[in-house]
Length: 335
Ligand SMILES: Nc1nc2c(c(=O)[nH]1)N[C@H]1C(S)=C(S)[C@@H](COP(=O)(O)O)O[C@H]1N2
Ligand SMILES: [Mo]
Image (tube, rainbow, N blue to C red; front, side):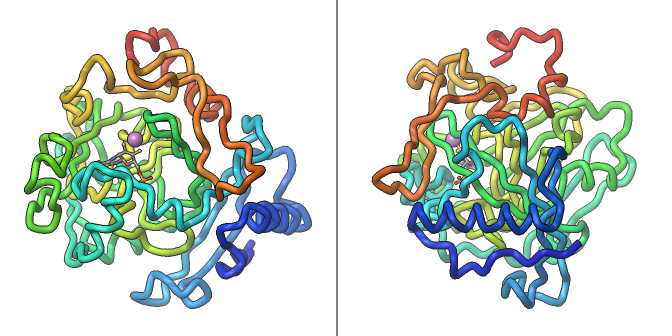
């Protein structure tokens, strides 16, 4: 079923407009019978011509919005304005301040790009730039993104499940973990050339997941947001999105994915193991030494009446889909 995404020009920085677009879309979905008991809502299909993006060819992509009944607040799925999503970023390769990635990444070249998937698998492969948007059907997924610094956003990502990619490379019986690596290119990424600018991180930025976390249907490889290819500051041309974990797990501008037998090292855990664990599941009961995790500041349009201090939910509200992955584990120890 094809539904047109609301015209982009309707989306601006006003709370009221955001809310009304949201309501409009909900009633459209309702009319078409998509809203109801089901948690999975197949919502919209756009193609390049209509959306005016993914400029390379005629590929149409399926978009699919996921809405979860676990949302406890009406505002939970009111999207953060695009302008905020692309101007308030953590991407230390382009500077450790929130406004630096947008300012310092605009010349970033993503073509050519190569993403290599290797390690414990029978069919290793290398994807080129064009493969990233063409090899797998693209979906839209509206997810909350929760940073460990206690701010959050609601972002309409475009991408495909990591599971689809992993199935293609055929992981073998030794594939217990998946390791991810960001591009290392100090000429293009000033934070890698200047350690002060780059926040003292050891580059390349690396992340990891257990294989069952990587195969979970919520785990997304994102190539776009708000119907357009990713801007550099959000992790062009391809990044990970793991919505039930703190944002630092959602590694950007990925060039390598490796299947491994052992748990791989991860950037923030190496830097401060007492602050950042490997699992990093959103957990309101486990405080970070500097930030209480009990509540968060939802970044909205910032309107006068927007209530933006909200309670943090276990697994960022995705417990129904992922809590089983951690059965029997002590989550205060494995934070
Ligand atoms: N390579 C790389 N990936 C990264 C980061 C980074 O500094 N470098 N920051 C992480 C953090 S802390 C967060 S909160 C999210 C922010 O994603 P956004 O800027 O798209 O909101 O990206 C994550 N991915
Ligand atoms: Mo973050």
